Length: 298
Image (tube, rainbow, N blue to C red; front, side, top):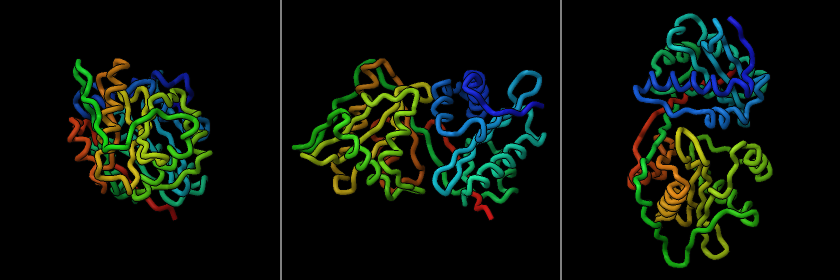
């Protein structure tokens, strides 16, 4: 068994490894691709925060961690034919040791819901389930989606450098009440956006009400086999007026224009703002589910 950090050269093989695992667990073709792996591994410091376990020239397990303020996120995947051999325990050990050295107080381990083999491993190590997230998707037809409608005096416009701070501020305010929200200063947020290999602000849109930015959506060109709604939020004072629906439809139309016929997003299954019902109202359905497990470090 060989253990080493993940490198960018591994991304195609790692994408295939993750896709095979997802296909097995969900019983349908996976949409994980190199674009997804590249996006997920842009944040972690790969030499210190990632692990690739190999045997006979192939990947048998992989994992990585990322620190978010006082909380660490841990991902680990073991090939189904290698489960029960201690590889999952090794990944958990590595994740906890690394995140502990970074000074985090809590760890959030993320698993795919059908991966029931992970449940006893994590509960046995002191983790408890704290949240579930859905990936919701829509398949667009040949005809463009309907045009969005907004209340009088409001309009949608593309992101620009002049609106960058207001755009960021509107999303920060919109997500303040969400589970585990941690504010991000503009400079750090902007640096992270620029570091993304597929950074494309031509897919970002906002709703203006005079000088105010009332709502915004930050989209990515490709995730999970289609266009991706990376973040969408409406400031509290403007909620209940159809702004989020308008931004969704506008985004769908832009993805459709670019040739994307599938669009997805991630959402907290317990979202308090009614987002899941909104997404269902525009034709989106639950495609997959993730589980978040939490452990408080001593």
